[in-house]
Image (cartoon, rainbow, N blue to C red; front, side, top):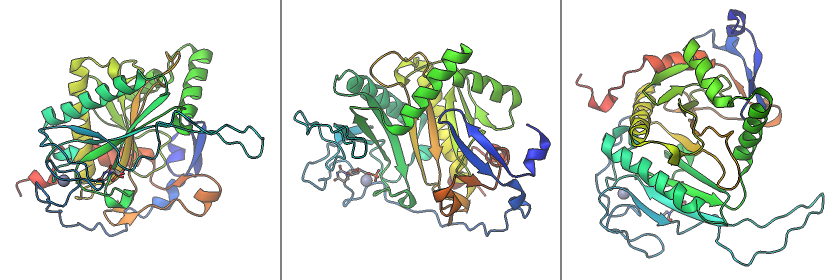
Length: 348
Ligand code: H2U
Ligand code: ZN
């Protein structure tokens, strides 16, 4: 990339979605004037009698949790989708289009420990989470009434997460949701026109250049994508071409657990806080041909320059297009320079 772009307003293209982001690096000439406040580390109990997700407790609608030792999965008591066998009729009126949607929502508790996060869990515990995600994808994708499986985690009350107990969710839908559908189309078009997988090529180019790479292990690379919108938005990408998480070998699953923990530690260390984000896995839809798919993880954190300064998508961003000040390269450098020892484990 030409050096001049590091000082001049420009637009960057997201080849996965076909959208553009406005980048205004000249606005960050004043480096990090915002106060970098430290929030006191939350001291949560390892078990909370009032938590709906802790082992042995009764949930909101009366079901009780078993005394689970590692991962525990249950059907969401307040699901956004229902497994309807009888659905209302579609209407294809061009101005009032409406279609039924059905599916399954599950909650995945990552650990029986109320006070942990992925960044604070042991590798073998996170490997169990990876295995559970793979089992869920396999189980749900075998169903004819499921077209897509969205695995995600909302972390932190700033993201609307209702409970600090480490957990994620799975929403499996009959149709492919809007964002994975856009990625599906773009990856298909790229393969058709260039004869190569879009993200295989992207990973190769990023590994040649390293400007936006945060860290890597044998199987994965963590980077700030060239087209990132959120200040510290990142992606975890498998280096090998794989359409779904169930294509991973056992060693690759271990490497994913490693990458998830290391990403989590770097994020927590960035503002010395339990870092909030929404993260999720994009992978091939469960029906049909999908050689063009290269699965990956997106992290979308809302914080801007401290634990208490949130970025808002307002004004021009609501009406025109997303915009950022700090460049993807600057964010990558900050994340790359951070320690992989969690700030709560530091002996100083
Ligand atoms: P968050 O990750 O956004 O906090 O969501 C937690 C989910 O857990 C939420 O979808 C579900 C909520 O419906 N839940 C239950 O299914 N049972 C409960 O007793 C509490 C929360
Ligand atoms: Zn709990």
